[in-house]
Length: 389
Image 1 (cartoon, rainbow, N blue to C red):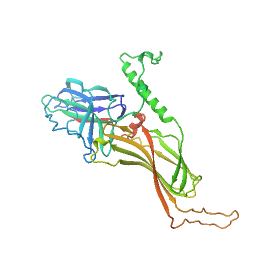
Image 2: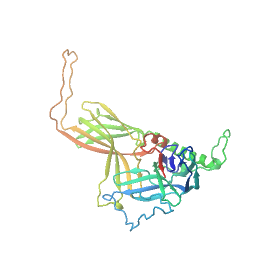
Image 3: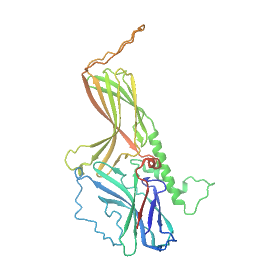
Image 4: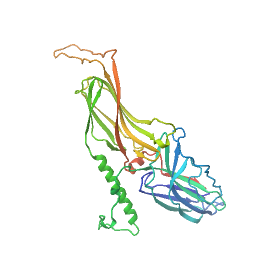
């Protein structure tokens, strides 16, 4: 028996265009003191990244793929990383051979490093109601005259959708350098990759840090309810969305309001299963507050780190919005009065029956990724997996 362990040292979350590095260790766990211990042999091992796509048959109408099936035999020496996976493989990287003819004595282990740039032309990781995009690193191993064994390590991919390409391009000859740091031989590619990631994160921080307050008058058919202020409309994962209401400028009493953070999943018209197909809306947080006789109020909604930022592919478009719901009174509501020299305790109770109107409003916002190292802390992926062969 040989134990194979794959571990992503930096965490299980990556940006497209960022190098993924994984250490893969092959161990013969038998003790050299055991009487039955013997050397173990592996014919070969290789690794590659692939993205699996799955669509809901009730929501998405995909073009016919014919009768294409996965016919890889157990003893076949051709590695198909998506063998046995649900859906179809829409993206993969060229396989890289880790070794050929590996011999491990009892108690011996060997570690190989796999590195590959996460493809920049793929979709982000996403598990929606209509489609799913799942990324995995697959390591294939085979003994001589034995079936191929596959070790899969799932990971998450974030896409900086809509960011200008100019922030990723920089001439190496004019790039700033530090003369006091030693340059390791063969380290140019790693330095280049780290600078690309740093520039992408810098542009992300600049884009989401700009504040430009937006003011909105909240009105219904009877008149003005409140004035709403939000400080920006572009956020990154993990940020708090903060907004304020000023009810003192309203003519219509507002009894209650709620704010929900929602994502809209829309199947593009060419792939809709039925005409005029409704959006799939998912709520990710809600703030509810009673505000009668309140001059001002505010809310704070955190954006979870484990949700998918907005993106668009040929099949699906994901957008984000704030969904507001207001409950207003049809008649004026008198506020309680307290006399200046009143000595007795007065208890004020609200009216038992109030005729109300309700209305809603949607405010589109943009949600961008965050630093992948930060998103790794809440990922349900561990970045580590193992198998015995």
